[in-house]
Length: 361
Image (tube, rainbow, N blue to C red; front, side, top):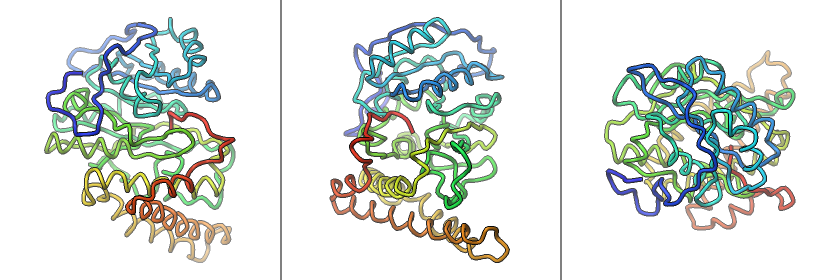
């Protein structure tokens, strides 16, 4: 990539010389005149999600507004790479290998390097887009000041929704949570499972920071948060818009329905926020969190004590988990601000036997 403005110190540029392209399937869709071309980017890292990857790609092929290009990035997994080439190489999908560091940020940066569209839409490998998803997600770009959009990620639970799991904390499983705008509105940053940016945004501001994002058995995040904040620093007046009509189903694996994962993920989020604020400052790094903590969480907590809720014990449990989640997030944040990242990481990491390279939310 040749950036119009040099990226911030410590944040890698998107392009990597010699980035390997396994296939060059080209585009199967024709972009109507006058509308921006769109690349849909999916990152995958494990064969355990193979069926979900296939479903994600199929949902993109089934869009009412088809993309000009689909890029599937495989994160340092040769077996998965070969399988993906065999499955999608002749199906209008560009399958490429992550040429940067292992992890979601590196995989996304590699995909951006290969993207040809004016808009780059990001879909998680375990998400399935509604047929009107892409058209809704890119519609706000008719406004030249809009440089990014984000849609709704509905939680697709493996069974019934855990009755103790508060909707205010659906971000724990990478989904939209109670407290987000219910109408189209400006936001600080989108949810990574369902978002888009103008290609120009990466040319100007650089790529996703490798120090953020999920890695190994540590469920960190906030790479899209830091990128969105940095983008506004490079382009004052840039807007990112929440688009409730752009919906996807985001699969939640069974291991993420447990209380221990809930608490570990909250600690990891706190640590991630600490890293972001050290990078961009408290005002920008915590602007959304302040209203969330002072409005959405108190409302959810009080709701658990209202008479008439059924069953009442689960309402109380959700209120209790709001307190526990806030406490765990605050703990992770405090440890990060004190420079005790290793302590927070040990609290947040999954047991070693469950560890695996992570490149998806």
